[in-house]
Length: 159
Image (tube, rainbow, N blue to C red):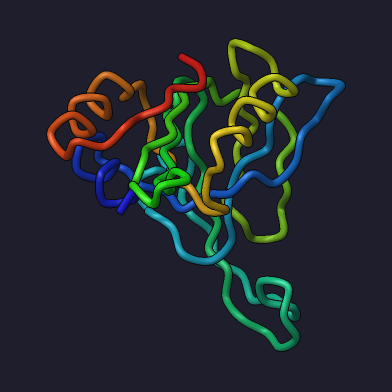
């Protein structure tokens, strides 16, 4: 659903997850293997490769790597609160140039205004799902409108 929302309002809806944190550079490395949204790959043409271990499982497979541009990015997760009601968790950051993994996964070096450590603490306190959606640009204002229409609470982590 998060992918569909971002694809509709932003034109891209890339499947993502929190990969790692580079504490020295104060950035989060965010991305995902396998499926993706080719529309997010504006920095360069997508690549496809055959790998011996596919998505952490034995046996080969194809991975498609997309290359999101540097600049503003929005992340959206849809999770549930303790009463079982849906809620949105949203954040805006900035994708920066930097080393990325080249094993066939789409990934981004994202800097958040509050810093990587504080961002991860705040993000995880909301109880987000493992998978999230990413879109190029700043879209929290529109996400807040969508949340209001659906009567869903939205927690904004950073802008």
